Length: 161
Image (tube, rainbow, N blue to C red; front, side):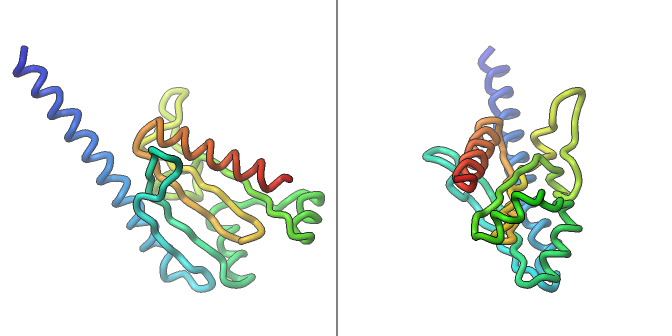
């Protein structure tokens, strides 16, 4: 019985380590994918504090000019705003949106297995239209995923004031 429990614990720890390594590699791959793109600035932050217990890796892509923003809109499939949102943006109010996307290619929808989004193969992408910035959050657990969604919803609520 002890042997079986020990093996199970080792399997869980190895699985967690692999998932964590996958997340770190995904962030590095995203950074490398976008770092040389003209018109944007890219940063990768490891262990970004989402709340008092959740830390996740984030890749940030920010447009430096109109051409960079046009490229980002195409690369990440960022839609145009409705006239009311455009007016608010021109008046200095941010429009913040988020979506679940593919961890390997945030321009694609999140992979689905059965009827559930595949956590290990997906990420959250937050968009600030005012800052012309995309934030790509990679979660290692459902709790982290929930914390990211909560953070992004708060940002949306704050931006709509």
